[in-house]
Length: 323
Image (cartoon, rainbow, N blue to C red; front, side):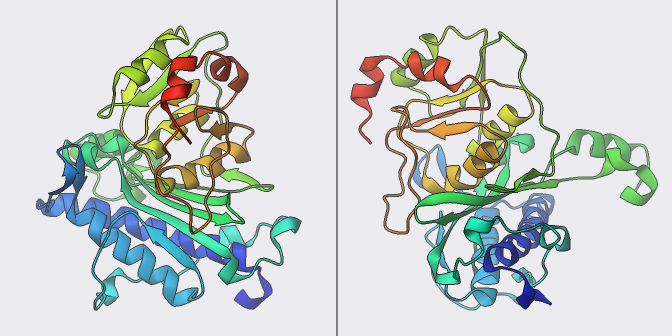
């Protein structure tokens, strides 16, 4: 029975199923062909029909099951009737098989804050760079990110498309290469699941950074780290996945721009496997419900060798970015 499980693990199990549904909505919108794009503050700050539908789906589904939660979503949407098709009531049983870390067993629903980015990498989504796109649900307690769910709607989509072109119309006949999308989840003190942990090549400094929000501060900071390679991609969720799968050794974003809903879920996944995510000054990010949404002092994250990158952040960059 659900009542025998802790609030946190029930919430994570529900958020996993909700994230799966969110990924399906993201794929459906693009398949239907009308993205419904609107500009929010600039040409690089976009919102699509998928952002709107997914946020309604996640927030409505969570609030129905956990009415005392504080839920903060990226999109500012009017309240109204919710299409029942958007509601996900299931929970992922694999999550419930895991023990809740002892420090979180007595958490109450009203103590938790959920940060939701319905579609991280919206600009890339509109441009067809689908492997950059993630759905992020982060869970915080006492200002600290403690659980996170990342859905990649288009994980494996190149293999999937090849299989479809060969005439395999279902995953059942096409095998694992045709499976589209995946969900990664983690809880501090328990671990992170749904991917294969891999470290970047030893001795290589491969930096992943913003694709569409670069400026002199960002480039100065990256240059000071003597990178062997710089990957410019979309989405904070996507960049953290690059760290945990060995494609990059550091995520550097020396600029205001990303928000708490961009970093909450990915931070948990990284911390659960021994990595570190801070602002450019080395401060932990705060996720209580009254905190400002902007990560105004940027982001520095690594799976290993955090001190190398932190020590090379120029003082000029630090002084320009006020926490």
